[in-house]
Length: 128
Image (cartoon, rainbow, N blue to C red):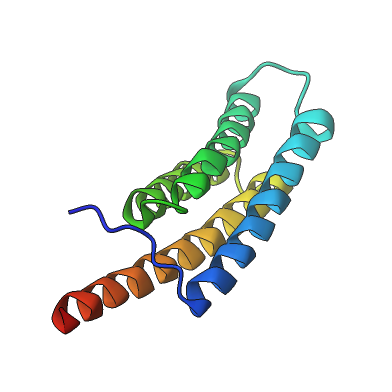
């Protein structure tokens, strides 16, 4: 069942924190693409490219959080998993480690939004 995001005070604060994190992730991905990408085309540079794409893919998943918190939360965790895999492939290079940590923190924020929305929805159903 799709749970719609409930806009209670804690979720509004968490959505603001998530939006700031999303902006930081986008900035880090752009800076990594511009300055941290290797000119050599090997397996490690491909992993960095996929990590940048996973970070950019987290933006539409976060925007989904404003309507369907469950889908957005799962999408953010999938992007964080891809980023972790790329981080392990590149042997924990600087930009991939930062993107992985930021995506994991955004995943925690989105999971908290999902949990609060589920609790608010069940409380609303029990009051009816």
